[in-house]
Length: 229
Image 1 (cartoon, rainbow, N blue to C red):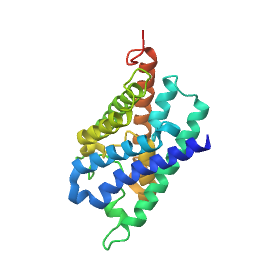
Image 2 (image 1 turned 180 degrees about the vertical axis):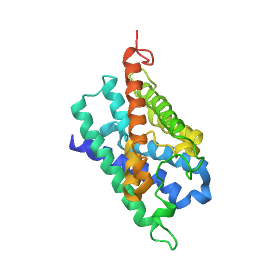
Image 3 (image 1 turned 30 degrees about the vertical axis):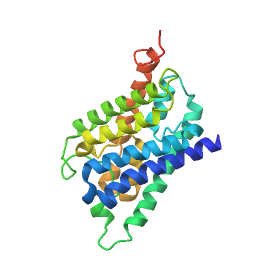
């Protein structure tokens, strides 16, 4: 179990340092398309590098979806989720140190790739839009993960399918919320940035977890399970 938890923490670290790092360190050069690909590549790297150890959930919404689908016991899931949060916090801290190495960086101004919504945040979408986007896209994301990792799915392609799906979700929604679909990914930057990022954090915990639970329930019902009778 310790190897699994380490793999989840390290994998989540990779996801956050790739994705949020692209936004903070290279966002003005690669734009939203580049940031979207960085998040997708982060998942692909962690999935193929660490997935054989822990399954590379990298995301509490994915883990809770595994629980509600009947593919993981809650007792094990708690450890996974704590490890993911720790990995994300360490990644955000490392990113802060790196970003601070250049003149003119101010965490209050430049941030750490934190999620948000409303006036002053990217497309200035409403709270309702943010909640719906995060819920729907997490449902889609976890549905893809459950299907791609099922015994009936083609072997060896799960990591690629999952990474490309996450990149696609970012291409659709960076301007809405910065895209979370992952409470751990949101917690790490928000804890360091504080202020509004921390106040808005509940959105990026509640909506993704709800979307993940629903995806698992639908999968368990057989509607999205490839091997269902």
